[in-house]
Each structure stands twice: as C-alpha cells, then as structure tokens.
Length: 297
Image (cartoon, rainbow, N blue to C red; front, side):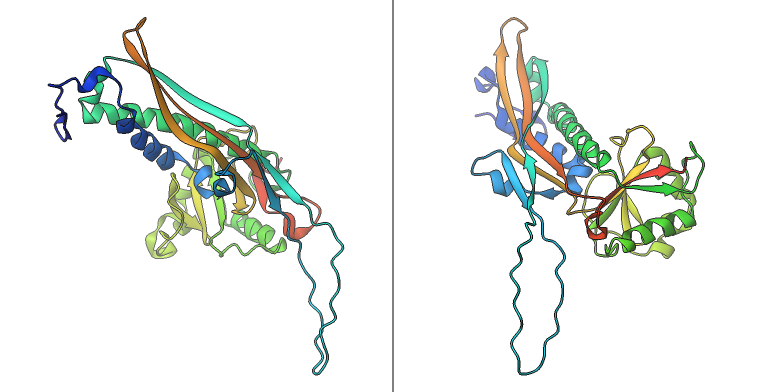
C-alpha cells in the first residue's frame, strides 16, 4: 500500500496509475488563503450562495432617528416609507490557474516538490482575486490626500491626523477593529522610519487583527497591510471599513486533472468562481466607508 510520509510516497504498487488530486487540493487551498490580503479583510457572503444562485443582495440600513419618550405615554411609531434598497454583488468572475506537470509520480513522491506546485497554484488564484478586490476599491470615488508632493512615497504625522479626521467625520470608529489600511510596498516600507509604527514599546501588542497576508503593525490603532495588488496609477493604498468591501464564492477553489498523452504529463488546473462589490458613497457622511490614498497634486 502506498504511504505518504516525511520521506515521500512508496510507489511499489500501482498507486501512480492516476493523479491523486486529494493530495493537492488541501495544499492549494492552504496557500490560497495564506496569500490573500484584500480577500482576508473583506466581508464574505459565500454562505448566502452556497445553495445556488449568482447574486447576493446586500441590504442598505440607513441611519435612524431617535425620538423623545415621555413617561406614561406610548412611543409614537412612524412607518418608514423610505426605500433603503440594496447593493447587488454579482458572481461573474471565473479565474483559473493551469499547469502541465510531467512525471507527476515523481512530483507526488516528493513532499517538498508537491508543496511548491501547490503553493504556486494557490498564490496565482489569490493574486487574481486580490487584484479584483483592489479594482473595486479603486472605483469608489472617495479620496484622502497625503500632504507630500507628487511622487514622494512617505507618511507623516500630519497624514495620520488627516486619515483619522476623515474617518471620524464620516462617523466611523477607526478603533473598532473593522477598519483596515492596505498600502503599496513602497509607501508601506516608509513606515519603518516611524517609531509609531515600528517600535513595539510604542505600538504595544497589535496582533489581534485578522491574519491576512502582509500584516505587521498598526497606525493610530488601524492595522496596516502591504499588497503588490495596489498598482492603480496615482494610488498609494486604501483605508476602508470591512462592510465596504464584499465578496462571495459560488465555487470555492477546487482542483481538477486530466492526463495528456501528447505531453506524457498531467494537466492540473485550480479554479474558482466569485464576485466582488464595493458598498460606499459620496452623498452622506455615514456611507463613506472606503477611500483611496493619494498624494496631494
């Protein structure tokens, strides 16, 4: 019987007559989750479409008004005739990571080599999904301008103040644990020049945040992440509330295979079907839940 262990697989039997996707699928899923940045911070509506369907209606719940209560009298109930509506998250994206592997038996017999292939497939899918979510954030329309001149990838204390004021003006509690900042690598790297970010005796414990890839510290209580997916021209990053960025999978990452006699190898493909939606706005304060970070022009 074939055995999987630290030394690999015993192929003395006919174990390698076919590709064994079960050995790969968990590895691909692991590396997929490990490499998500935006995907690890977004609100996941996958459970809504697990039973079928390709649209998630995200309800809008507008801010309500308080009323006076007089002792001994009933509360005056008013019918809310305003159509709060909803935002539609449409499952309309299908991404695949294909690979042709020759001599798959040799690959499967080597734990380290199989992990490398699984890692590559998982990373490819994660990168594509993060790019989709970054694109959704980039289309939000709200911006926060840094005080630096164009082309200077630097943060300053005044920039922190601007970000905090913007969030508070929009009635967003930036210390709630649901507000995140994701920066492009060059701007993120500049943060290590700042004691408020890099020194543990200043920031204290900051490891209660989501374990999305790219996290290392926080600014003014906001967890900060780095992602190479931030590549929109003129944008250095984003700050957003978790409720603004939404995603759902109708098909979680899966693995399929087919032997190719032409190439004497196995065609392996990991794929996933998903959708993204940014819920934000510019008309009222409490709907501004996501901002692009830019330099002053």
